[in-house]
Length: 223
Image 1: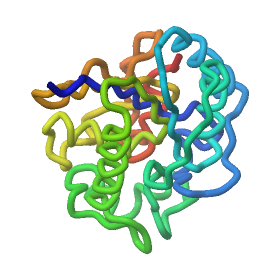
Image 2: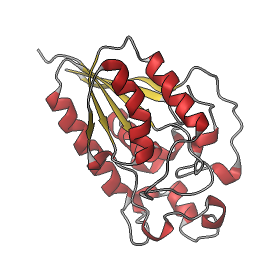
Image 3: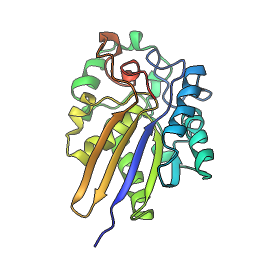
Image 4: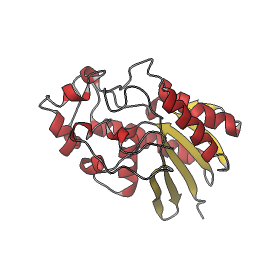
């Protein structure tokens, strides 16, 4: 009988680019004061979870989110490039307000399965590498509980895959900074245990300029 494996998908905490610019793989994007407080609270909130491993995207904002959790559990952060943010190519670093003027922007929102960022990855490539990485981590930890610290869209794409949701509908999911999404992998298949868990209720205020890729950050205040 296959042992159930539990996976926590954690989005990095808040930084000054959240809801403003498309950070992508921009180096040097660090957590701000609010984000560091979120990361500390996250580590405390997950202090009693029996984690055996913590994996992270190689970007600074994910590593800084993972570090307090790793220290709390006495674990070493295992870095995996496949858990990194979408490579947005020529869109990297541009403001969300500016990007809304691009012809490709509405396609990103309603038909993402057809999108390739100029000079960057396609959405399908991002989902494929994220799922491949998660599957490899699952295989390495049967019957155990593991945390992955990654980014909003890759997490949403992974959840969509395991929940059987078409990629073109993944934007209907919300993954806020420092939120936890839990998946259980059973012998009958994956189960979504919780989605976008934080200690606070959402504001339910979704702004037009904030909708879509990399921008659901303001919807919940985070843990």
